[in-house]
Length: 295
Picture 1 (cartoon, rainbow, N blue to C red):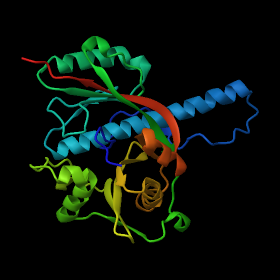
Picture 2 (tube, one colour; picture 1 turned 90 degrees about the horizontal axis):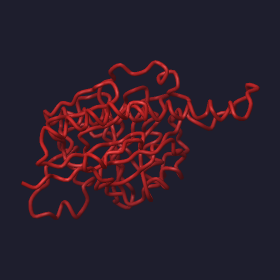
Picture 3 (cartoon, helix red, strand yellow; picture 1 turned 30 degrees about the vertical axis):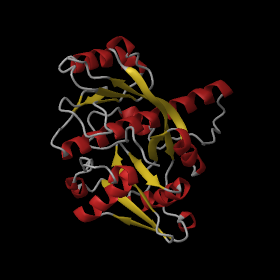
Picture 4 (cartoon, rainbow, N blue to C red; picture 1 turned 30 degrees about the horizontal axis):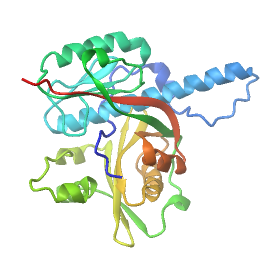
């Protein structure tokens, strides 16, 4: 996968709802042996799913904040959304919502105020709960995707891929090589070098791990793990065989950040690969784009 759109998320939790924290390990695929009616059981399952989706959204906002801070463009957490006024590295949104439809009016107002500060550049919003109507502000949908999760991933040698070697990037040279593999051959062949997305200072954060996967046949893959909001986000996956990349990263996450649910978001073929690796879709999101205003 060569992701040309937007990547997923980590940083520092601020004012996260206690109820959501209590639900962080409650991903579907549980057995409700409580005597509840079928309707009640469905309701409980929906609430659990909503809880892990909220944690995934907040983890994502935290990751975006970490990436922006590494570029000296810190963001701001405002209760129901994260935003940055300073511009973002390519592929990253200016806003990530962290609460659902009940917060939509306040979120839309905040987004309107934000884009009013500079209409001569593009703006991007990650609508984490697919509930905003931003057409009135001039936005257009860029793409839709699904939040995904798998519960309590732990190291399991049976899931390590034969012939694959997974390592953590630890120095600037390794990170530079990792990013060249991530951007792909087309970007590497560009006449002018593309600006860096992942700055070396991210390596000093012990909540973030850049994972490199080397196959016996010489092919490479990898991804990023980030811990925050009581979950571990998987993002920026790449490789020629995405099913093997997923199956390598899951046990790596269990080794580095044991006992936490894994979350992320995908769409299209990459979503199918994640599901084959054991992830479930837990909620929809939408990326919105506001074109730059001419003149």
